[in-house]
Length: 562
Image (cartoon, rainbow, N blue to C red; front, side):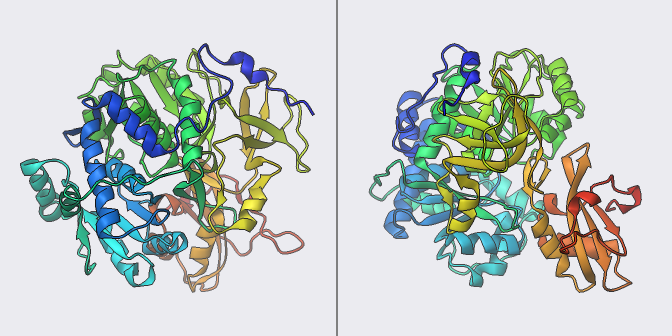
């Protein structure tokens, strides 16, 4: 059957229909080429310190040498990186890849339970962790396979006096580092110092070697590691770079990176693509501090900003944002969750820059579709497929549907993951006949632009992060006072969606406060329910399956967690 690609007629000038996913053999080769070309240009800035491409090159080489020569780590072993947006992240990322290791990005806000699952599942040999979160690792240290623990402090790469001062303030004034015991752990600064004296490392990497185990949830509620190869990552860089090049110039851009680099969107679009383009990433460590974020923005004539709807909305509602200098802003890119029209229209009004929406998943490295950068207004569309990518809308039998028909969005292309780590059954559910089945429901118009209509899965999207009902339900069901529980997503002005749980009590004295405290102990912030309701029974099908769809009515105001 001839597969129609109406979107090709709408590619901007200079964007190829096909790319070579093996133009570079690995992420390392992309990085090394950029170091050659942009050596003295700033690469990453954070907390008042800037590292040039040469600085990142030197430090990442030292990190790689230590991992190989001192720790004896072998190609293909996994290393977890657990930190927010700080200078240590890119140094460790490129260093780990130079050592031939697979990076396991780890959310620093994980609870001990979540961290243990990821470290056990990935069989990580080593972890680099910011000391602010080391107490979490300490609680599960004896239960995970990690052999080597490297601890870093916030100020470690900020230079002499400033770094020492920041570390003192964080530890002793702000008291942001809870006590922890990790016997035998190494310090990042010493690792770099010693590594710089060791022979350099050049691990041969092939396109099909794993670059990342990028964890994502599933309808089963168990976080799974999407196996992303160097070929996947290079392909997505090659697919998106020519589109961005319509707005951005190599070696010139200042990119605001507020989304965490452990999230696939910022990892690929901000870190990898703009490293490839010689861009200067300004890392925002705590974007939730909106006042501080706006203050940091005021220091830069930034030209690119990426984010999720909640981030853009937060900035628009922060005093002083509308007074910033936007004269150099060329592109604003939204992903991770649906961009709301009201936010996009206000963004353009305040900044003079269109908010360009794209779409993707962890399993697609992540970009599958994007709006052309020359659009003049927000369209409500997720755009057109990137080069070398086919997107179709399919029914439950796998038949490709026509223009305007609603079905499941499916993707095929060189950026699609190899599969889920150690989960062939889960892989087989989503990879069928060469297509990745996304679980998102959508439609295509006659020009080849795609639109998300709804989600097939029960997944809840909170500020761009996937939350899976089964995981919430499993945690709450562990409480002895709970008989039954169901979790659903409900619309939320601030975060797009929020978690609502409906509970049938076993203990009549059970309170919402009891549930809140239980969730605080076992779930990361964005996964915790915003609304807690109690009922005498849950709606069920004739086979006893809880009917979540019947619980999605707007929550009662009194059920909001105080």
